[in-house]
Amino acid sequence: MLHEVLDPAGSPADAPAFVAGHWVADGQPVPRIGPYVRETVSRSYPAAPEQIRTALGFARSGARTVAALAPAARAAILDRAARLATEHRAGLARLIALELGKPVRDGGGEIDRVADTLAVCAAETRQIGGVTLPVAGWPRGVGDTALTFRAPAGVALAITPFNAPANLLAHKLGAAFAAGNSTLVKAPPQAPATTAAVVALLLEAGLPAEAVQLLHGGAEVGAALCAAPEVDVISFTGSTATGAAVARAAGAKRLVLELGGNAATIVCADADIANAARTCARTGYSNSGQSCISVQRVYVQRSRYAEFLESFRAEVARLRVGDPLDQSTDVGSMVDEDAAARVEKWTAEAVARGATLLLGGTRDGATLHPTVLADPPQDCAVVAEEVFGALVAVLPFDDLAGVIDTCNRSRFGLQAGLFTSDINTIVTTWRELQVGGLVVNGSSNYRLDHVPFGGVKDSGFGRESPGHMIEDYTVVKTLILRGMSIWGEES
Image (cartoon, rainbow, N blue to C red; front, side, top):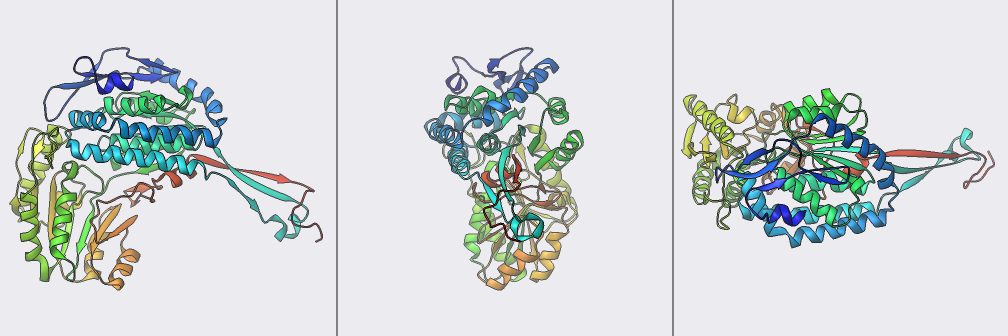
């Protein structure tokens, strides 16, 4: 199936569902229009209620089969999948470019991360264990022994977003399988073939059919899966509003929610301004800014503000906008025309309220030209909300306490960047800034896939990295041995 998706005999690529061990293309196909090429690039088959019921029943019955696999067996499959991702790097990157308009160079980087993520999942599988509890330290526990181990939760639901469909699926499905679960994957409608290809890749690596099922569809499919009693744990990445809907539908289930952001990067007076400007330009417009940690707000100390603006504008002007299939393209298209039109509208509103437009502000279909705004009001949408587009706002600040307070007024708190060489500034910002992560001498848009990642406030809860996700995908089971002690029996 992997080869059929990556190299279809004709265009567009079919993205069937995978249910109860079979690839299924039932019902009326829904076309995915590539945002750059503006023609159908793939077709998916939304799940009907009967298909959802079949998938849920198969997941519940198959969970025991998956749990019976030894960690070494699960790790070997994940290692093979990591190697396959590298082998199919070019084809997967091309598919991402067609479905999403992400430059093929960035898509290749995403597949490199898929390989890394799956390899980390394999390594973490080998670390799953338990502990011996010190029960004999209290009188009532004398003469007893207590042990724990981490058991699979059972059935996991992975709901993935469009902006990094391959790597975020690798995180969710890879960690869920590493923990010994059966997983239901709800694909993003914008990237159905990419999702199908990653699932097919894992199956080709030896993932048992009981370990994964793939369903397509919109919000109604996601809601039905979230509410299903067969599902034990849900991992969702997406917007804050949709995350709230997931939580309402889920009820009393374990949740990991990685939600939106409007990431800030702080540039202090002692920073290397040229490096900060170059880094923010490269990471503010990659994937057309469609990342929850994309550089959206840059606060520059006032004494270096003009210098940064000049350097940043020049760096952004050098970015090449064009065909995402061209290896030299830096900025492709956004996910669709509506998304680009929204950012164009927000830009015009900011300018009308006093912001200075230094670059961009226009679009060609779904392609938004990289936009730079100087000093918009703090309550403008481009500052207060999540832009999720190819726009960066640059604002001056006077002192560290003030800029930390400004950043903390946001309802989001995912990740931030800080450019400085002062250790006191670093420690103070790390302590005081209300975010899940701080990147020093880098922008907000930097992530290592084996490092804990997640936010606070409206940016969600839980941490996405294979090791932490395995904790969410497992339950602690305790064994108490009465009258059997490894600690000594005299009280």
